[in-house]
Length: 345
Image (cartoon, rainbow, N blue to C red):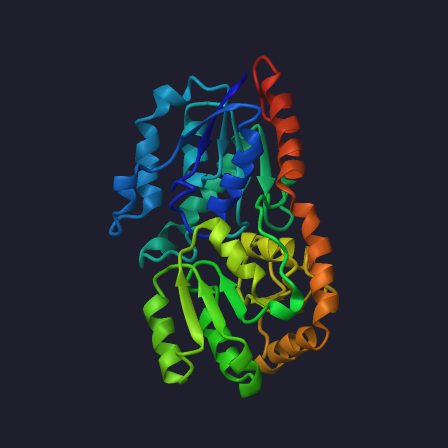
């Protein structure tokens, strides 16, 4: 059995956002084919908040090069990880989880000054990798890979579902503050039956809680924190609609998870989301620069014809089956490793 090192900045057990669940769901079937060894920041480093984890991970991998050379192939979910192994000519496959620059929305004030460096790094990755994949919209030189979904959560009866949910990082660019404002403008009768649940963690949590207080809807806006993936999907399955309003995305894992349990989605039409959310069928899309009235109309459309939206959402979620997604990846990895001296395709 071939051995593969998987590069992931933070362990999929501790990371938040879509990459952690993506990697964990791949592992369900990928581990049947290869000996997998994960290279992530040690837990003690993950607690550090004053230094970017990307920077710490860069140096962590530099000290791990001798062990990385021993693997048949590197599977990287980390731009900085792929850059390090490219410097040492180690064969690797890279998965882009978002087509935007990963530091363009940095939580650190100086992050924007490293944007050009990361653009340079991404160029090196595309030139050096044996193969590149993209989870988001089409990217020149990268093959499309869908979010793998693997869980045992049951689809809930439509009549038993209540509430709306956002799931993701509580950071700028997700526009959760706008979702809260939109929710506050819904008729009282709808809000009394449907609380707004916000799942995830991030630097904006306190400001979002304060916003809910100011709008006098704090009793209806419930912050769930960072949930384990199965617990999150179970929570999503009990809600009526997932609400997203991101300025930029690749393709959010949370949307794939919602569709997999038959929960319709309202989202901005960004990234690869329009490839899977079909207006008037399994959800509704609004423009990136939407007006609140347009978003409110989208919510009402789904509520007024809920059973049809929910049925279509469940059907469309079938494409994210982790077994099918992983098998396609395995075929590619085997082809690469069958070469005596792997070279970039």
